[in-house]
Length: 197
Image (cartoon, rainbow, N blue to C red; front, top):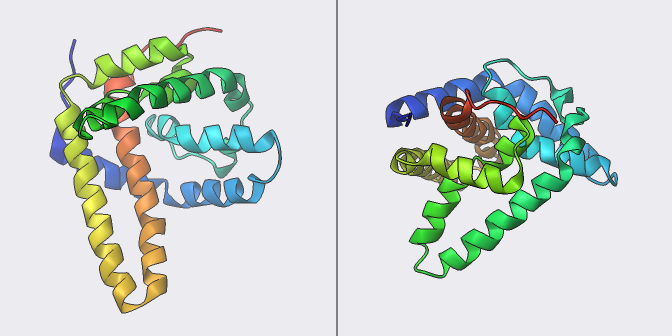
């Protein structure tokens, strides 16, 4: 059954989920920055940062220590495989006047989350992400556009007034963007069964 996303609800839930998890997400980001130079550990923490919206989508407040969970290493190969395949598909599509690349990037936007959260294989995650986003690409695109343009306008104005204010805007924008992804993922993929590996 195809699920329909509501544009207004996407924006409201993005802000709500993002701000609810703001301290935790900021803690995750600080811990990721502190560990980015440690070989192997940085792979797990990077996968965690990229796939945090899956944890946020479940409605719980995440712990900053979530990025050290061993589950992120379990799917390392599939994570890199799905990321590489997605890039190989989207890059050539961008050459066709950018629009097909944007459509495909939205179509495959849930694939890494499906790999880590649901244990799906790379090709299955790409196909499932495409199916889940079918009929919702406009709502997703418009929500991303509104948040992106809003952040850009506020960032430009505040940076013009005083440079450090722009940095503060980016810090507050990060959880809202992750909240949007979490909301989309939770609504579209929340009831997708997990693979038992």
